[in-house]
Amino acid sequence: MTVHDVALIRGDGIGPELVDAALTVLAKVSDLYGFDIGITEVDAGAGAYERTGEVLDAAGRAAVGAADAVLTGPVGLPSVRLPDGTTAGRLEGILHAELGLHTRLRPVELLPGVPSRLDARPGSVDYVVVRDIAAPRYVPGGAAGSDGDGRGGGDGNSRGNGAGRGRGGADERRGVQVDEVSDTLTVAREDCVRTVRRAFELARSRSGSRRDRVRRVTCADRADTLRGMRLLREVFLDVAGDYPEIRAECLYADAAAEALVTAPEYFDVIVTADPVGGVLSALGAGTVGGAALCPSGAVGDAAGCFGPVTGSAPSLAGRRRANPVGQILAAAMMLDHLGEPAAARSVREAVRGALDMGTVRVERDGRSDCGAAAAAEAIAREVQPGA
Image (cartoon, rainbow, N blue to C red; front, side):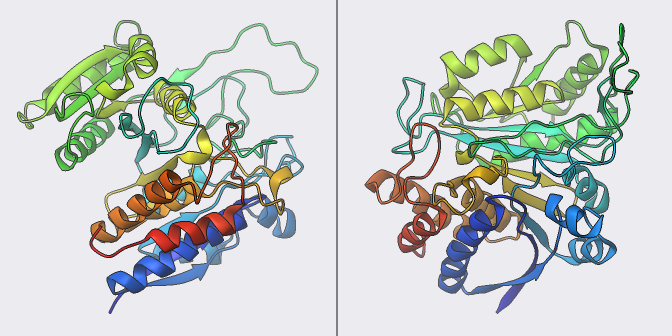
């Protein structure tokens, strides 16, 4: 039997509930498809920092480095702060550096039974935002030195506020008025090539846009105003020549944002860079029911780290309101990364089936009506071989 070694980070707030839900579904699918998931628990995040003074200690770094993949719940707690006052528990940047992760994948799909602000049918919105995360790339002025994007713990099952990477140009002392700051956006050709190729390879593996079934990669940029974005577009058009079967198109970021609301079914794969990528990803999540429904993956040449988009929402912990769908779909992304595509498809179909039949219900604010454990059991019952 194939054994996949997974480093597991339960996270903070509702994180342990979400991770347990994903493990319930993984246990069912691994049994049906004849492989095993070997779990190594890693203590990391804001709670770990509060207990030990380290977000991820040396043993944890060794464990994630040795694993075939990392599955993480949301991290961050509003009450746990670094000495400079910024949120403790930021983990993404640490994992990016430890594992050599360079590309983020953010699927956006309108699932059955999910309240949405869009006038769209379930399944008609299904695209992926691909962006470079080789850090540090975007350095906002005034940001305290940190290891990554960091997610805070919102009051709902929602994305928390993050901070920038690296150090900016503002005076960070409290009480000092700052009259001017400068932000730096660095875009490297090598990173662009790697990210753009990942986008085209992904489009090659998909069935195309939900509007016309055309395999399409759209470059969303600000090439009209930012030199770094002009470089991204230049690389995009160059790499596109290696994929003649994939339609390559360019849109300015503002036009892309509008189209993601007015015509989301047109998109298949979107490739971009920060800060545009973060904005478009969050916009997409908002159109399909919220961050709790969305998974995320960060991948490198070999390694991969997967988790939900949602924040740690400590006020929901233990109240049976946490929505595990994004976490379970992140586990499906991990299965794809581990070379188990049939099992990954089965998990996604199980999620759709449970939502379609109403055995898992999502409220308008994105929360679960029955809690993570009950939702996971309902989804696990829908897992079928050969999906």
